[in-house]
Image (tube, rainbow, N blue to C red; front, top):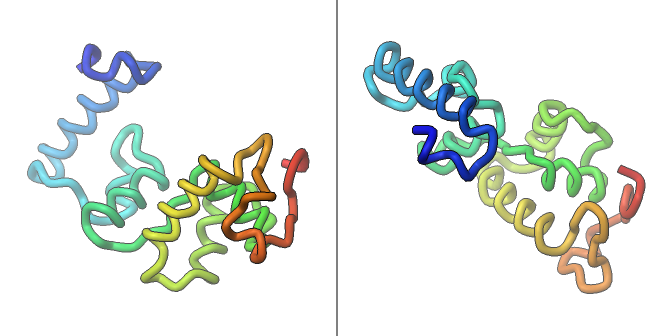
Length: 141
């Protein structure tokens, strides 16, 4: 397993976690990936972000993923002032319709990577500039 994940960094710990989680999947879940947030985050190395990705993309159960890009864009667009990912998740879930959680998460991540980057957002060419109150842009995060 270490050979398979070596290029990802911290590969010894990741390999250990993968093996431990695989054993737990077999012993506790009959070899099936759990379908609830609580059961997923109980697996070693699985946090809320990963659990929500699995729920939304594998099981079609919407969850709002919050990574560094979504956190940054949520603040810049004025949806939240929170920096804690769990608080951002809960606030976004209140303002975004449930059926849009998964797709909006993908769109925000792509936008955060390509256009609204952490250090130098490209506001001049931004596709959603008219929606942006420019809260927290450049240097305030």
